[in-house]
Image (tube, rainbow, N blue to C red; front, side):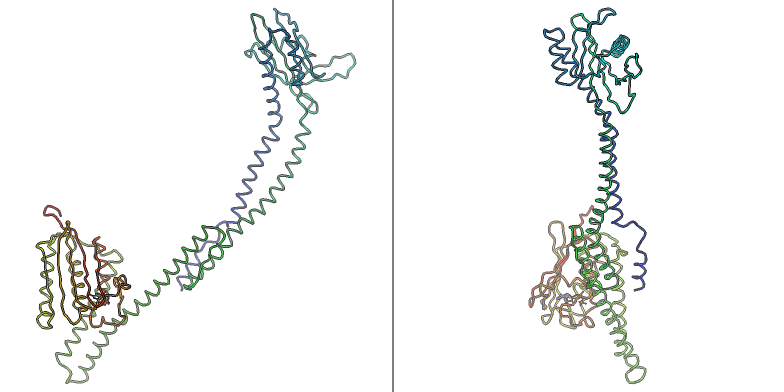
Length: 498
Ligand code: ADP
């Protein structure tokens, strides 16, 4: 419990919550969108509008150039000027003289029809320098002084007034040089921009409010199920394995809840197993200890009981106790992976034959019939001591569970480069629904504590761990009332292999 409390204390509280993260992300996103809108819709509006005008004038000039030497060219110029609401003046250049060959105006404040000779020559020079085209922004300024001319100034003189954009094209058609001057008015866009700015401030405010509401709603959707899961996880950490996680809202949370429910079931099962294991181990350690204590006291208190038979019981129980302890140790080492097989090539058949000799006493004194059939030398690469432990465990189990017939058959057969060790008995067999459980430590088919008589209850767990450490195939075939066959297989080593 202390460890659990400590673990909970280490939960960090300083990282930003989902709610704030979502809010910040949304605000950043909205700001980015607004800035982009502001840049293109407000800041660059004038520029884009002007570029559009220049492009339009260029297209018109191309069209007019293609009709330059044709009949009714001035009609074409008139029509185009009206259609596009622009002013056009076409000059033929001969030496230093410019003669207007066509002109059309669509508005009275155009530059084209108030061109001074100086400005015209300036436009001509610039177009020539620039490879035939030249564009310029100009503003018409009305001169209020009596007797003074109105004039044109390049660029933007008065921001509240309309601006003219000039597009100049210099071409040579059939040896004659022409200068086309096109002029279009830019409508004053200051009012448009200020309207847009007001709209924009409203959009900013509305979007920010919407962002707060959305961030709150989205984070609620995410946070509520997570908070409930966190609270339940806390209960699980505090030892309540009955807790049930409910995922709702979206798939990821449902998956998380399913995984946590599975983890809770597994933790609960492991916890039960651990408790059962401790109970079994304590019981098994206590049984021989009680016997040892009882017989030692008997021998101490009653001199008549101080005989070899009672001493033998004490020795047998001590042996059982030390077997149990060393089995437990072996098993934990194998399962923790600290004990690894030390493999050597040895003859499995010779090992089984040697082992069989140790059952001679059982055969002779207790009437067991233990047979062995092999098919000649069977070299395998394995840990000899561990495999001997497996063989012992399997034969001991067969002897213990064979029943009245007292018959056990051990075989070693070879096929497809493998040797198969099998031990069969005519005992009570194992019910099919329990056949997978018997490999778990301390599993008992009949739940009757036979181990005090028969074994440590860890035999098959050790067999399983050893064979899995060797990557060997193993199994059991059993029928209730008929008997069981426990087997394992190892690859045969060719003489030149090691
Ligand atoms: P133990 O034999 O000490 O109880 P094991 O791990 O060797 O422990 O075996 C686990 C269980 O598997 C046994 O309690 C028994 O129920 C069953 N079992 C093992 N071998 C046999 C067998 N040859 N015939 C029938 N049941 C067996």
